[in-house]
Image 1 (cartoon, helix red, strand yellow):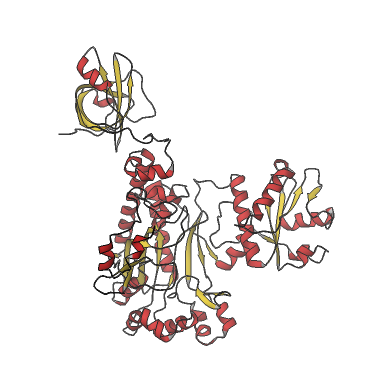
Image 2 (cartoon, one colour):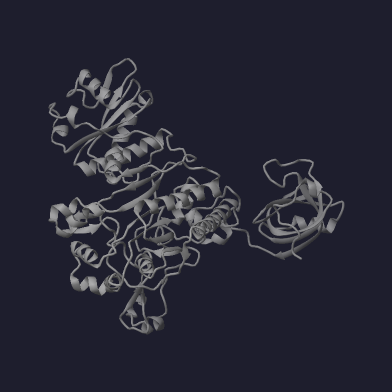
Length: 590
């Protein structure tokens, strides 16, 4: 027997018991006659004690143990004289009687403790060592619990888990596909799924009624903290349902997950239209943990002789409460430079400091006197001690820029409490987006999203300008400014789906070649249906108040899409390339 208990199990009530433990040597401390070893496994740490007076050979052996040696010990539980209140096993220690070294270990390349000295790439290269650290291990255990609770809730709600294929057909919509060459079909390729979208719709046509899957998806896109080339979705679809029935079901799932994993009872989720989100926050995923809502300023700032405002489509601002005394001219100049960065692209930043003595200090003071600035303050709800920030320009671009400023001020002012959770549904998205560069429409969500019922006829008969105003029966779940998931009611009528493909620039032949299987299925009694997909990795991160999803993935890729541990992507053998009918010269290029 390797162990009678794990290393997090023993308590003061176990004093006097003989036990066997196995684990890794996290740290050793030699005090001459006494040697202490912290033995660690997945469950915790237990202190071992070796006394040279009791067993000299055993104590000398303990003094030579290296970090991360794999050990098996047998001994007696005793009460510690110097207790450790920060450790569940801190009231006891093991007086060791026998020691067996199960395996040695090279010195690890970084410290395997909660606070480590290893950089990201180094820890990813030795991910199997990194996972011995409690923070990483606990994240993976949390992920497991979240998956189990997801399955429980959906299973109890009559959802059926169905696996869909990983080798599918490549389509041009959305992000780039990862493609897989077919050896048996020379010159032809599979694609890895960006989502199981069409398959879950076909399951509704097949009468499965309620489907779910915790499924791997793949997108060949640029990476950042909340993106990986392979990621996991909670993917779901329902038949014979309205939008609100879907929202109620998955609001219930979200509440269940928060309750079971964090013991948090979430309130009912408010709904906000896409148009309201953009006008109030400049974002379709607003962080509503704090206010600082946008105030449109055209009415009281234009036609005052300030050409920057007068020529703008939109003048819009926010009020940062109570910070005027904390922000010097130097601080405000830094903030202006931050807004001018290429990532944001603002041409400048107008600010008005509302001083405690009732005066104003502003970058536009020569165009607007104190009476005008007082009018600004009155209209915007600004008081003494506040700062008004304003931007102007083209409507959509300016709102997005001000959203970046709002979020930055929220961070600087400590308004983003990671322990506060503000969920909401953003609904009624535009169905289509017009792209000037490609001179065509793109689907805001995906090509299978249905227009709102009242917009269906306009979609079938309307002109180009009408198409820009079509609304989708689509919805996103947003928590603390992060899009957790999104979905829509789907098109289930062949004619309407064909019309949408027409609007998106597909020829009849292209639509038939790429999606003929789905269009054909719609001719055999497709029911009304809709669904949603949650980003599972992102949900893990948001519930734990962090930005990066990599900490919740067992073997993640880095920002270049590389697996540092197994060193991939990598070249393959020339013979493999020949078998796949690929050009072998590719493998010869450095």
